Length: 489
Ligand SMILES: Nc1ncnc2c1ncn2[C@@H]1O[C@H](COP(=O)(O)OP(=O)(O)O)[C@@H](O)[C@H]1O
Ligand SMILES: O=P(O)(O)OC[C@H]1O[C@](O)(CO)[C@@H](O)[C@@H]1O
Ligand SMILES: [Mg+2]
Image: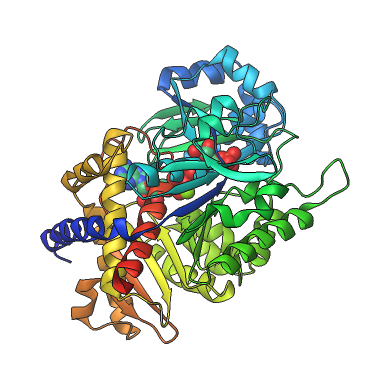
């Protein structure tokens, strides 16, 4: 693969997508937003934290692999597990004890918009999309301040029995508490010594402690559901936050009730615009019952497009019964990309999707059901556009507008990503997914699916990594929809 050719394609794609975006009437984005308290961990801070515990106790807790943060020791254990493998993870906590302990013993560097829906709403608004309707069931006054204050970003509000669209600052529910997550960003090559063991962090990544206070409900306000037509016209919906759903609730309801409500919302959105396309953005979901329910009850058959990272592909395959494939995806060796591709194809089939967009560090893979409305070139433009967004966000830590996004064009394409794709060429040509020439374009033609592969832009020393995947998925999905509208205009 010729890197110069791909740089040029990034440029062409950016301007093609920029021309298409104004064709979008609107996007609906729900459910989860929170305030991210971000802490960039240094070696010194980490060893000070470890020093607050008995190191043998930390090791012992690491062995139990806690799936929930009940006390600071659980946090220490999951932080070391995440750093040891350089793997992103998001762990729920249902009490504020750890929040208090972290405020006392560590503090954070800065607070920012968090949550897939929060990050995606702000990004789409900053790209100048005509109308972005954000919906956060737990919108607090403080949280409302983290949304872009621009006239194209609105939030539904119940007024005199009706639903009107207001700036988030005028749509919050008084008295709602804020949901604050802790994000621990760590860098490649950090040295960790604990319990007589020593290791180096293999890549930049982050651990998320997701606060799940008991009052949180992943549900749509009744009145807003009844007047859902008031958010239209919209061309697409990006939904996320289902990881908030719990198995049991104090009032006797269970996750089945919230899954049912979530599906009703999706069905009503599609009834109000049969052309509507719906995308779900995943995150790491520790509870396997919930992870399976989200995939098989909400995503499968109801949703068109799924966005996820490589770890989430492995985790999804695992609960869908493909343990072997899941393991080979997570093993990340030379055959990593082949397994990742096979895994993404498996998800498209198992979940009856039109589109599965996987983002990895250095390349993206997008699997498409046959008959998808756009050409592979138009899909490739959408992915290349999102790669430029990722570059800009990693470089500057934010994207305020399309001009900021353009800065991403100066970020070099990852040579490791090119190398990973080159390792995949033999498999593709061997399986007759493409001729050697077609591989140069990044187009694959399967028996029951097509695919687009692109090498992506990677910043060597990123400002922060949290939320880049959300930006990639949002940029590509919006660009794809815009192209569909432009082609029909
Ligand atoms: N330094 C970087 N430069 C460019 N892209 C990056 C960088 N670090 C991470 N990314 C991209 O961001 C993605 C992270 O996605 P994900 O794990 O879903 O994070 P989040 O859900 O927090 O957005 C990676 O798959 C990669 O494509
Ligand atoms: O599951 P939660 O608590 O909504 O948190 C989602 C987390 O994932 C992110 O949206 C990144 O994808 C963070 O900003 C946020 O803290
Ligand atoms: Mg993600």
